[in-house]
Image (cartoon, rainbow, N blue to C red; front, side, top):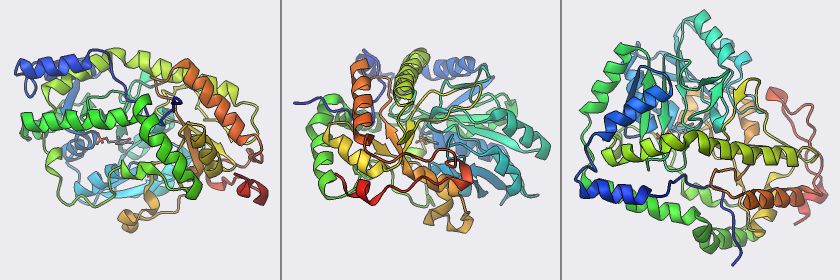
Length: 439
Ligand SMILES: *Cc1c(COP(=O)(O)O)cnc(C)c1O
């Protein structure tokens, strides 16, 4: 059977499974010394004073928001392009999300648009370092100082990335990280808040430690279901199910399987019980191991990204990711623009390579946030982007194959008009009728 290349790859370290079993055997799956150690090492890695673990990145964020003790209905600025759950947590904390458009080139907050959205009720801004690329923190911090705003960085997709030599998560008053299975540090769920502010840290910790411990049964379920999910995106698992189904579907529609993986977009009026838990000791053991390897894994993704960027430089139908000055992108995702993304994706899956159209939500136009709707053409444009597999566990030969496939599938596609493909005016050349009907 052909080796198929899935869109995602989970970061694991040989020996992880043994460590998991050993922690259960020792009776240290739920509680144990690794939790404090992981928090301490995480803070130290970021040269920050405090790190507090949580059941999810989103809960770390929620604790931070509550710890800020803001007046109800304070406004909080988010990029229009982000995981829907983050602004939803702000609403749960009694705040009003305000969406600021992103630069379609960088996928991050467009600093030139921030000030137009600030009112006398604005208290917080959340720069999200999307897809592994740091935001322009110089400009954002300058604006925040000018308007006396608190900065809370969303580092869920960018653990380890640096801006002007400094790690993301160290610029604002607080930051949060996610340790979901597909993130840079994988503890099969989990999150962390970091801050240098002792009062914020104490209030975050009080909330986090008030949650009940996970039970052993819950933990066993967490690992069995995660490991089952993980095997589906492994090269073997993917070759057996994802590739055949994806290739078959590509004949009949543009349906995308990934919508069955992502959480349903819904109001979180009441938190599911899994939110109200503490990070376990066994997850902290995995977190410590993953943190030790974070830079090495990020470097692998970066070198894969370099292969694509160099290899695609002369493809007129493709625009490669735009890294901003002095930012060290860690490529959680490698997003390109193609003149006909759907056709490119369909052709690629038939050759055993799975591209994803972007899955991050354009929150400014979601029905969930209709009360906060905003016109964000930059974020809307990102729906046309395509993600190439760039995860650290890809082999060099996989990366070369992806590059060959992507070049092949766009060879006859029309050129992208790059000059105008920026920000609000972004507009790609429409594919010709001819290209649309080609299969
Ligand atoms: C994954 C993610 C989160 C939240 O992480 P959880 O641990 O799932 O709560 C927040 N923001 C972004 C941009 C993410 O990708």
